[in-house]
Length: 304
Image (tube, rainbow, N blue to C red; front, top):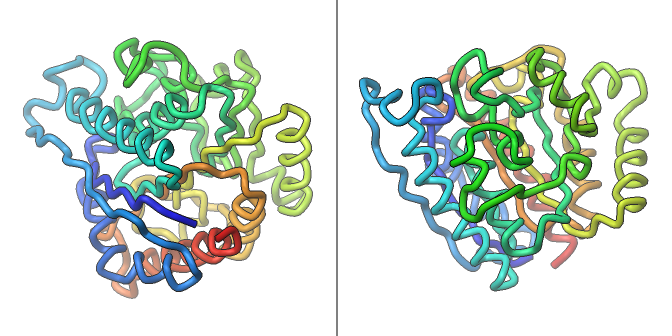
């Protein structure tokens, strides 16, 4: 697979410093070599500039959403890079940073390929809050909402005006910490969600079969895969912004990622929310990230 490796050192979406160091720590621990080890080619590696904003000014642009201008500017730059990479025939592999970057990655793929893109959101959270429903004002809990046209207008119209993805083409897998306002939005929009409780009851293989049955029925040939490490159990990823218990183990997560990537439908990828500052002394989170990134690399390599 020919890859454009895009680093996004963004923490303004989660307001928890340290996650911006994730791309560099993964790079220093051999991410590029890991990708090429399995036959992938990293054609380009680039880093998105994140405009600084002081904590004192975090509500300057909006009374509820923190660091809005920095989040918006960063995502506009990312959207441009994702769109350009796709038009060059490359796979954008977006390394965060926090999950607010999903706004830019989805805007970019939608602009390049059209809004009939399927979105696979692997996350402990639904990330479909709006300014009205968000308990925190952190925009990393909003990317899926704004991409569906729900929320602050200037974020919904990022990169180009209008909805980026259709709600019924969005699939959330592994959710187990969903706000009440998000549940209401899921029900209203008819978003597909497989909660961890269902995954535990039915097993990962059954969930994967059902997912691909729906994808085939809807004729979705182009997918965006957004992977938040907090989809893993908190014992495996203490170094993340919002760890949640009862998550996937590494075997389950690798099974899911391998099946999705080996379908050949994935056109762009996010890998987000690794916060080295919150990791334990034994670097368990770093090791979990590298284990998962090896699964990504191996599966992508089979498509080369």
